[in-house]
Image 1: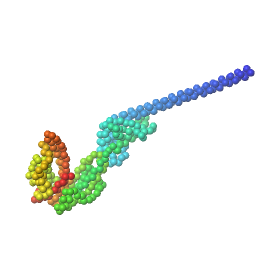
Image 2 (image 1 turned 60 degrees about the horizontal axis):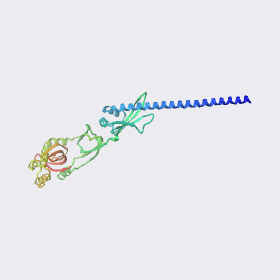
Image 3 (image 1 turned 30 degrees about the horizontal axis):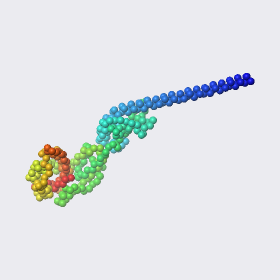
Image 4 (image 1 turned 90 degrees about the horizontal axis):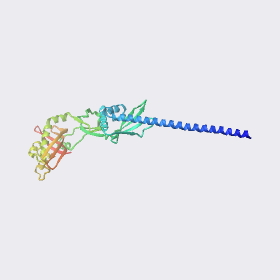
Length: 342
């Protein structure tokens, strides 16, 4: 009996040691897993911190040269890469945008294996940057957000003999949208007077970031401009001063076709009882003559645009207006016969 009891107690003790050893092993395993997890978390935190440090450095260098280079290297949008001029315009647009306060945050495309950041300029998304890891973080790809651009489409109708240049580049036939006979009000009047319309083409210029610089060269228009532009500028100076009571009808009438609609209209203005505002100061700040069109040897029209500043002791204003004007030739001189405000 005594021996059996000792044997049983010895067996219980052995079982206790086995269980205790297993418990200790479990505890050490848990501690090991916790330490490994903590180490992994610490490494992840360090990796994130390093990618953030890279992004801090990246947005510091957002100038025109960097953006132009990035567009050349990464950009897939054909609108941006259509030409060297287009690339320069987009680089200038984004560089100007980057003058605002730059921030970044994780993009919805972000993942553990590839950090992706939205780069913002004053709250608007400027670009999306994806990073690559190769012993350290580097720029994998960057795409600039063209959705922020309000692209413009410009349509221009000119005579078929004209050459159109946009931002220094001559447009070719691929930009011609339509070929037709066009007629403004002055042209319709010219038809009534026996003239005929020239042929017109319409150019369509798409994806303009800003209003493009457009020049139109036409041998017919150039010859007219050389012959009559000085006379038209003098006439319009007198006309504007006449309208604000700085000159009289006699200063304008030598440039008008006697008995024409233009002559009769301004003669009526001269005798009108009610006049408008008489500012003390009237200045023509800018003026331009464009879109010459010839309908016969003795008929042509053009478009005149002016900016006029007016002021007195009580008020001041700047006004811009455009006239389409039709001229008739008589005895070697050109006289205004019809005009309409556009």
